[in-house]
Length: 232
Image 1: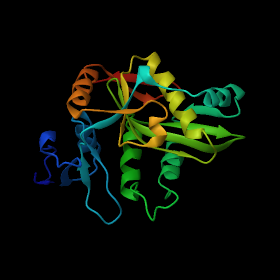
Image 2: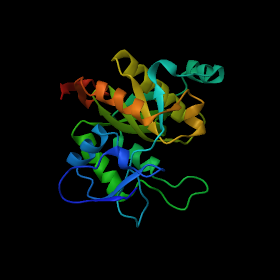
Image 3: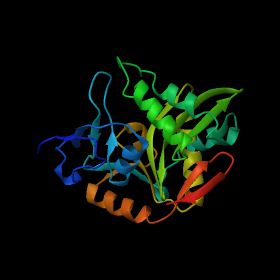
């Protein structure tokens, strides 16, 4: 399959045209309009410093169904100790900056300066959200992602202490479950998320769930203070 080059018009090729690994298109920009259009079609940007913007729609898709979250016994014990505090949308900038730091064994990061600004813009507009994990007043873990309808698109997470990112995901799960969300899109498979119950599903099934989820209003705004409103 060819890789499509995007132009100024905010439109994407059919996801069925993606290459075997999921690469669909190259180019365009990271404007809020284009990013939101991409997520509504099951597409997301993912590229490294020095590369053009790359747009992906992998098949199969790695997801965590809300009703399939697995919390281990040790993780339950960790949460029961209440040694950390968890908040929403208090420090989005700090969370995405921490997520952008190169991991062990990596030379760089896919969360470039351009990507950070793009998601900060979505956060300002009320579409991107963060979960923060604090210990003794310091940020020690968290995650961020995009919410549309009743689906949350997870982007990245980090931990400076054991179990911090898992605690963030479990708290996010509780928030989403109470509000009727169907699943968390994890995009790319990882052992870390698989241990919490995430699994692969066919892209066709993911798109069906996505379209159903988009029929509901988006909880747009600050999730930490619940000062949000529904928006189409």
